[in-house]
Image 1 (tube, rainbow, N blue to C red):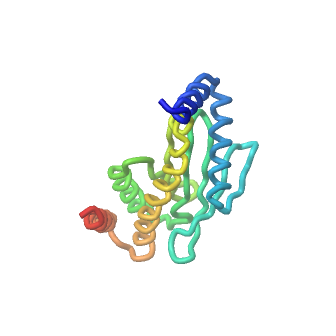
Image 2: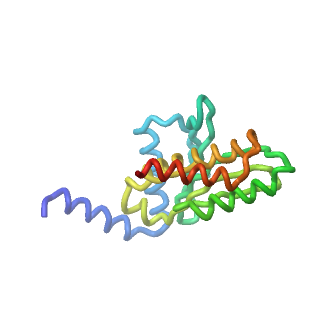
Image 3: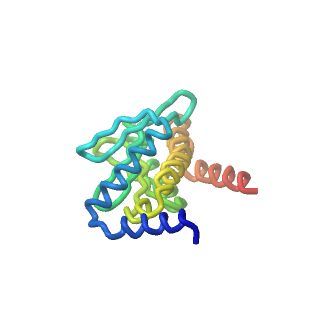
Length: 179
């Protein structure tokens, strides 16, 4: 076994031996380091342990993504639709349900108090604690999935497209991408 592997395993053992508050602090440090290395235009909120990062979602349109370390978990969330019309609420719930049935990770949440829709992913802190690459992998996964969710809800609101047709088109697109 070479010295790098030994260092890698010792690092993991050390991280596992810490209490959960220190584990959260380490993952928080890793998350901030990742955002700095990737040059993400981020706002870092130390006390609350979250980072805001605007990413372009579609042709100059930006959404603010939130990356949070809390309750022994790593959370990613983004609001994909804000201020939806009340008369579209039933279709919003139907489309959210379709997405939730298909999503490999995360959940689409409809908030009727604020008339908004969020896409959230959450993973136990242990995974990014042991595999720091998971922080970046989840950011990329969350972003890529959110693009489809955003596009689906935009079609629903702007084009008044039926939720079943939106989902069918997304599935067809995914099928051709994998073929």
